[in-house]
Length: 523
Image (tube, rainbow, N blue to C red; front, side, top):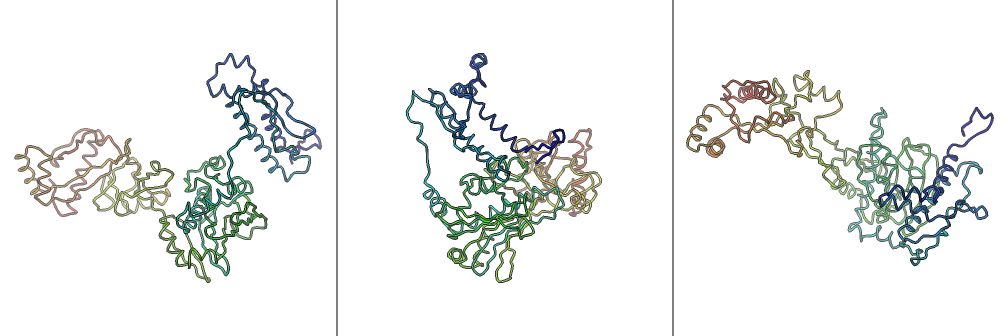
């Protein structure tokens, strides 16, 4: 309750008032809100015109039947599309009333909504037949379809679905807490006890409204909702369809769900669900765990009809989940085994998730994960592959140790995304250093073939040539003075002050140093 000092001892309930204002706005749905004269003047587009025409059908300005304590709308409609739009609008009002009642349920009586949930539709329709027909679903038929092996050819897939849900929960929580010094370490645990097997995570958990709106609402995924979008996080969830949990009934006829939301860590919601039963038993108790999260509990005998042993669980999980960056544990008889904990390697990677359909995917461009940076002075490591990206790395970096310190202090590693051009291609120069003998062989081949590229191809086939040095280029302007095949004379002067000339000067010093390291003279 919020006390307003300017009004003496009077009190106001802001949530109750906000719902009344919102409901009042919903009920302002008639021709007074959308007058015909203004409609004729505006010449609206098709969608806007349809919205206005809905208002014209309503003839009653008082919308509440005080005797029945029910909202009603009266009028006449001749267009079926408009009538369907009005009916959808009534459904929105009914959902608003239900949500308001749930959120106000803890208030004293005078601050609750006592109005009927159902809108009374008294709008006549003369130009079309019945509008009472609706699509419907048989709960048992649909649930059996989604729970059964018609959808999942292997019952073991149910454990995969559960772990994917847990991964979303813990990785989202990690994203939410990333700017806080919470010390949060995500984990998923599959635990065996005398009569039960449980899958536990320390993720975000679920609130009462999330349980009702998403978990128990088949096909409504939290990760496709405004509630998720309003978190404004960069995490890309695995789950999208809101049906994965139903596969859990492949593992057990009876399931218990214990969940504590990070928003309210003091309360644990306990749900008991049985296969092919719509009724869900719910109770609340004080949270006994130190953190939020969700635990799914199965009957062990049922579970072991699918996974005969914890060893089989370990093998399935380790074969199914790779490089999650989350500890996945299996515990039995006071023994605990970590079966999946590879930190996500973000070094030297190209992220291609944007080209995949809701799949997070990246791959490494190099054979190992160490940095190979080509700088003005010298590469940090001797290698066949380097990066030329002077803009990214500060001038204070002089050697590999400095680079490691810089990466640690900045909390990040170099990502190869910076090297992609506008067409998402890597800009790569391949440098083939030639010593004096190879240069002579190349010149003789060039005289005969009268083509530099053909002469080099002949040299590669018939004479030993050093392996190429690959240099990944961030600045595309470096390429402006290069063609597909170029010869760089190490003895000729390089003039100019543009990016390409600067790079060629650096490149010449670099190749000379490389030759000395490798024991040959570059010409």
